[in-house]
Image (cartoon, rainbow, N blue to C red):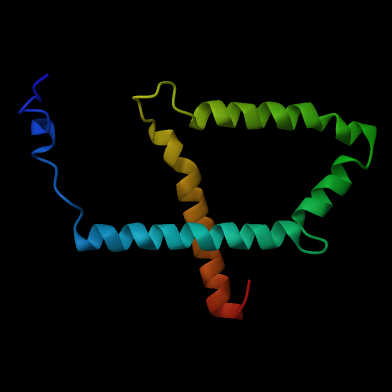
Amino acid sequence: MAADPNKYKKNADLRPDTLVQTIMSVGSMILMFIGIIGLAMELFKDEGWLKTALAWLFDSTTHMMFIPVIALVLWLLNRWFSTPAKGETKKSGNIPMYLMMIIGTYYVYRIITTGGF
């Protein structure tokens, strides 16, 4: 079986990223990592968000009725951000990345102004 000589012709017009694009990608990744670390520290510290939220949620049976609502909201968010088919991409899938970059920017600001998370 002979190889198709035009197999890679569709990639002929692809160009590598410029230095500015690479620096912006690395900066975005660093902001996301800082955001993830900052949120993890807020969630899991003593008297953090996770402990406070779970204490409130299991405080009474009325509050426990929010569990199915929370599950439904999380499921809807997953459906909204997920790609419907393998070959397609959705712009809404980038929203979590941009949110994490905003959170990372906030934690960078806190590090600069207060010296810590």
